[in-house]
Image (cartoon, rainbow, N blue to C red):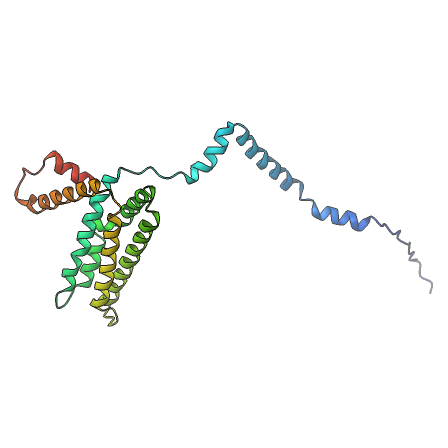
Length: 227
């Protein structure tokens, strides 16, 4: 039986440009992506072109690298000295037969010690301006590392870790205090002496505060606002 359907094969013409056209098409982004990219770049450039030349050079960089304006050095020295004394008091906690390690951890997180990180970095920044950059930076790093290790030892000891000994705690305590001493040596003598005098007044006032209302002088109020 003869089939009524005939299949006719037509030869396809070879198109040497077909491959190139296909590659070119794959390299071109979709029209909507290309348009959005052009709009974004145009918007960014238009913002730049609206800025004066000096502003382009300054604002785009200074916005990110300009150093935060600090308070006067006198505002940072007394809290650092008070924190140093507070940390030094930890030795008394450790000299008892059964130290309360949780109380020691709280001591590191309260009062002037709680803001020590910020204050010593500010003092170090002033020291850097005076040419003591390396010394001050090393002192800050040593102090903070020692305090972090000390806090870790307190935590481990509170969990009955026998390797967290009081001797190790005292060693880290000494390292932190020595680093603070070294950092304070970068402070100009006049500023340091004034800071020590302010701390002395503040501490003596705090000891008597409970029994007297006459201590609310302007000097004490100023000290309390700083500390």
